[in-house]
Image (cartoon, rainbow, N blue to C red):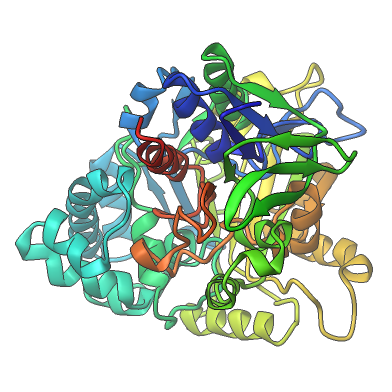
Length: 512
């Protein structure tokens, strides 16, 4: 009989298992899929290019605390993207954000304005200060927003911090007096909207913006990094640590119920009828799937209501691509490193923010937008280890704001047409791109749900509009039942802090 059962072998569950096993507890991890990693894995999905690897779900590592890497003795092959952002246009203007600040300033002044450059510097300096201040709070159980500000944030920034976390992307970005709406749109899309049901004026999008600026990985300079071998390297490495300390990881082991007797956990039952006893069960599954594993009488109705109120459908479409050759951008035909970074495709009309707002409204109406916000990646230019013998490139379109359920039609009917439409948007910036696409592997919100086992296809389990004590607590009203998932503090993404913190709560409860 193990001391602890962890349900789900996503990155947080594996962190919890590793932390508890290291402290001498016997730990069994049960994973329903045939592979570990959850949405953090490397796959080979292309029939016409079976040797081409791609991070099908999560695709960059940014937010895992360096302290956690050290604690788990993880030595990940991290690759810095320099440049890390590329904002192309359909004319001659562009921005290529990297460590060459002098050249970036030249681009800002030449293509946009001195005012935009100064706003960019001021905003990023403030976010860097907040990142440094807030960092210790991520590896401890959460306090309220106000208590967090009081304990961790320097006095001069406390009110800005509180307003950022409660407010909208508009309220934060407009503070810095950017002149260009295109630059504001880029920051809103990549930081405030990613994986979240929210637009430019939605309260809480500021919280998501802050979360996405919490990158402190060694050698990153505050930017998100590529992991050599794809994101599966992260979860395989954590699993190796867990096994080293004695944890057992079982795949193809679907949990169908958590056994509770008089308010106390007794173990779990698997799909094949097997029962495993344990006094502690930690769920890495999303909160809504987990609640379905527990008899309704075992949890107070008000707790269920509170947790279920956090549920919103996912709004992300991930289109994984096999490319025959690299694209050629109209604004920057020569290779200056623009293929490795996040490539931001944004509407080119004068009212870009209005166009994005229309896209968000379309999604809420169950419609597919004519021009959603798109992030484009070609990671094999930085990590050639995933290329196949034929030299194909992996690529992906990360599309924000698509409906989980389409009004008047279905994803089955619309998927192929819409992906061709998205590739035609790529063609506007880099003519001929769609001709270079040999095959695609698309994950609509319903496919994210089935492929990775996440309710509603919501990549963060719970919107990152919710922060600190407003997120899912690690403890449940059932003695011995805990959460360690992305729905908990500090946020959804490949962070691992929720797994770390949940392990600490369990150890404290066990007197360890």
